[in-house]
Image (cartoon, rainbow, N blue to C red; front, side, top):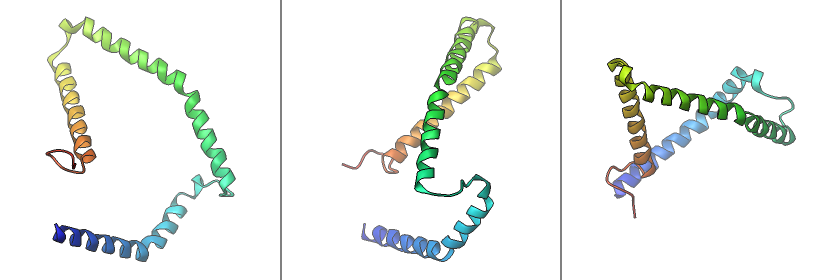
Length: 122
């Protein structure tokens, strides 16, 4: 356990040294590449205004998303009603999609447990 802690500390030191050495250059480069997205003047008030705009824009988009959800649900109902006409290819694609969803769920569970396969640390 002590060796793992030592390895973790050395990795953290290496990462902080790398950031200290290259962080400013990367920051300037990133800002230069994306200067068209920077709102002038970059003040706290402007940030608060933009966050309110984002919140209310997302709030205004709820009816459209609600309608899209019901259209998707109607499509699934239509496929379920006509499942006898379903091709093997379409069923295979749906099965693979379901398998991928389950795999991402499992990855999320592993990450949530702190990258252990056996269970949570208690």
